Image (cartoon, rainbow, N blue to C red; front, side, top):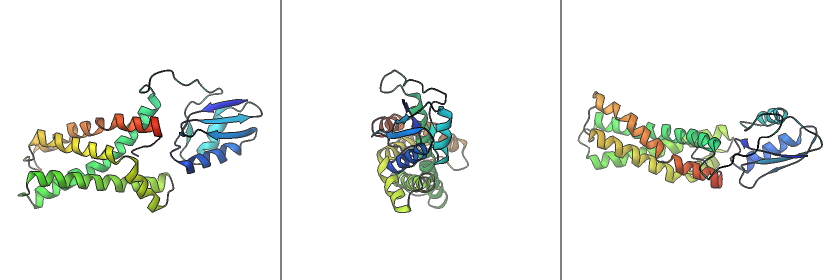
Length: 225
């Protein structure tokens, strides 16, 4: 008897090994195979094992869960490349993590320059804001990788740099460009226009890299975070 499950939270070979070990320890499981793209896990069993039992086993191994909970696995949804709601939800969470990290550095740098160096040229403000946002986004992702995926610091940093740098650059350009178009870079910190600019800038910064992050998850199981 063989069933295939979409298991959420598997992002690397180390995660796959943890899930395989957890499922293999369940009584009645004969073998466990994680797909090369990490999207599904196939479990061969001597007898029927409720999905809830398997889900409980993988959740004890870390932040993993079987996508469809029930006594029988549900068939994969039929649709095009861009139709998987589960991946859109995960891509949205990953993109939100990027957005938070970018926003900390981006707006923090703009606030600092306006408060202490008001004569800074606009081109320099935009450039420093973009660089600062990229740095804080990578740092936040490194911390998340270290504690969420239990990676060593050096591996967490390399993974944060390599996973979705293009996504972070696109987000930074979108946010900074939108903010500049609304405020012209001249709105004071106390101005409502300055702070209201954050919402459309953040929305654009979220939407621009979202399809790219979905594509990475779908094709390579990579995440911005």
